Length: 517
Image (tube, rainbow, N blue to C red):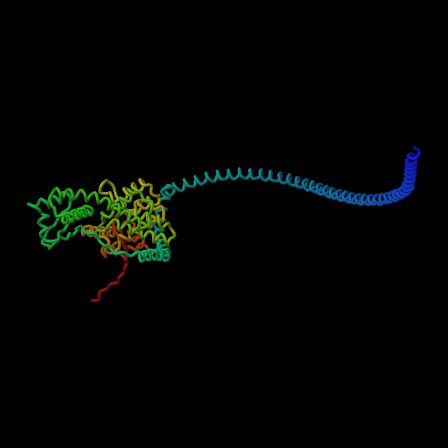
């Protein structure tokens, strides 16, 4: 037992001694560390105090700088406030001065107003006295002269009118000549250039149409037994059928182009068909009449297409096509309307106006002629009603109403339509006129010229396109001759209807004559 306890005791002693040695080592080592730690703490405290002192110095310097800046700003603000106070004081002084000046002005204005009122009352009393004096003088003058004021005024006005008539005529002549130097040349250039750009052959419509026959035997078949076929054709179509000795040809005569065209197509269809008898004639005539309506619409569409006019009512297109079968003094109405439309478009382009609207107005200016034989009224009034019905532009309405001078023209396009209408009608060979109308026009021109005082003789020349008026030189002076020409122009325009233009020439000639014996 003792042998076994000895190592245990030895182990315990060893452990205790080891623990003691370790404890001593730790103790001595801890003392060294604590000394170092204390030393480090002391150094840290010294460093912290040093930094604290440095920081405090920096803070003091910054606070001092901030204090200086604040003091500077306060001084500046005080200076600004002082300046503003001085300005306000100065303004108050100025306002006080102005107020005193305004008060002085008000006082002076009141004084002036009072003076003006006093002077006004004085003037009013003086005017009243003057009016009374003038009335008294006027009444005395009327008693002395034995003339009333109104009568004297009328006499003076008549005398002034007589004295100024010559000067007015001279002034008008000078202004007209000045205007003609520029306006006439410019207008002439526009018209001539438009006519040169638009060139088309003139073809006068005839009142007869010729139908070629395959042989002379067909004439007998058209006449029929005892003339029944020719009587049926003439009664149904409303035309005259002329069958003479002309070989292989017959003539259809009528003043209505539509009837003549229907009759021509009917007869040509009968000749091709070969069956010619009254019932067949009526059947063919009815069918051709129905087909003619399609042809009329086609003619209207072609006219609008050639002119570049769109958005036209179908019924209005049909009326335009009907113009192809209407004539005016031998001139085809549709060709005339298309020609007017083309000329209007060309002149509108030169003047910077709406070309399409000008063409539309030119095409529709004679639209009333398409149905003027069906209803009462002039073609102008009928045309205006048609244009209103199909909601045409106001410019087109005015162009239709004014192209014969029936009303005032409200646009340039209306004037262009009138000019183009005159140009188309005045082209050589465009229209035919009857001999009776021609003679009446010449006689009327000479009567109008002879109706003026101081005219010795009037001569109508160049088929009525020129009138020469011979005046008495001892009664009419040069200035009055211009007045006669202008008055005659106005009278011809208001009383006559004529194609184209009429030139008026007033001739004043002085002759000295002696006879040697």
